[in-house]
Length: 171
Image 1 (cartoon, helix red, strand yellow):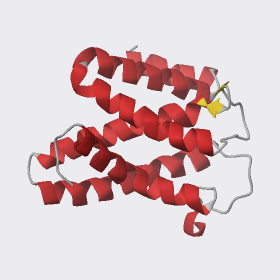
Image 2 (spheres, rainbow, N blue to C red):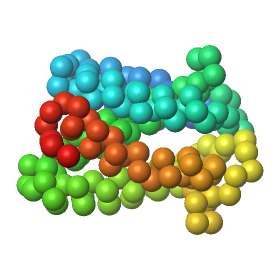
Image 3 (cartoon, rainbow, N blue to C red):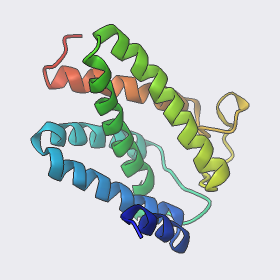
């Protein structure tokens, strides 16, 4: 049985968000081990972005929640890993063309974000314990208008900020 098979088996034995938290920690740690200084700053900036959202907006799910203080670990780690992944994809696109990379990352970011939101909500039953309407009535991104705006802009904004801070791009 492969390691992937073991992780998938564990997802059914343990609550899904707990399994995701453990998996995301492992993925971020593996990225740190493999790429060290090249990715550590990206992870730090992504964590700060995620902390802005998760400390401002209190995520409480209808199923189990895992907190450190008032910060829910599932969205904190999900946002951190997602933003780091977004930046790595952007850097792959950037090798072709700067302009192409920005268009490609916005489209890729939104497609992946909407797909993850859809799968999490409908397939994995990961739902907030709130009555906020979804974005455009399509069943994803349930939250106040400010949170929806953050969701839609966080990926591209993170790419711009990280590239600017690390001196790899002039804005």
